[in-house]
Image (cartoon, rainbow, N blue to C red; front, side, top):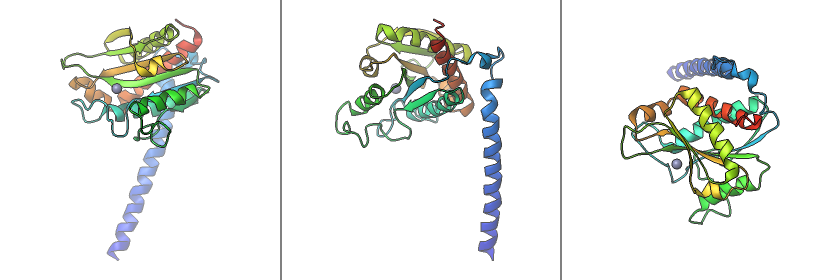
Length: 238
Ligand SMILES: [Zn+2]
C-alpha cells in the first residue's frame, strides 16, 4: 500500500512538472518578441531560409575552461547554442550543430584518433554542409579575475563583417564590456571555407560573469544578442 501511495504521489509531481515545463516553454517561445524594448522582432526578417553552423566549443574529455563559477565552458556554450538554435529556427533559419551533446564532436568520426580530431570534426561538419556562416562559441579566461567582457575573433577578411555584427549584437543585448573584434589564427577560423567567427562570451575567471553564464536567463540574453547579430549580418548591416 505504501508503495502504491509513493507511485501515486510521484505521478502528481510528474504531472505538475510537465505542466510547469509546458507553461515555461510557451512563455519562452514568446521571449524574443518581448525581450527587446526596441521591437527588434519586427526587424528579424533576414533569417528566413538561411543556414547557420553553430559550434559549441570543447566537449567530451575537454570541458574547456573550468573557471570560478558552478558550470564549465563546455556546458555554458552548449546551452547557449541550443537556445540560439531554437530562436533561429523560429525565424525560419536552418541550424547545423557541430556537437549536440556533451560528447566530443570527433566521437564516431574518422577524426576520433587524431590530435586535432575534435577541431577537424567541427571544420569538416561546416565545410561539408550548405551552411552560410560558422559561429564557434566559447568563454574566455584571464589571470586577472577582474577582467570582464566579450570579444569576437575572425581570421579571413570574409569573416570580419560577421565578427562585427555578432559583437555589436551581444554587447547591445547584454551590456557586456565591449572588447571588440580581433584577428586570431584559430584552427576553426582558418580552416573553414565559409565566413566564420569565434565568440568569447565573458570570462570564467571573473566571478560575476562566471555566475551569470551559469544562469538560463543570461544564456538566453546572449542567444538573443547573437540572433540579432546574425540577422544584421544577413541584412547587410555592416
Ligand atoms: Zn574555449
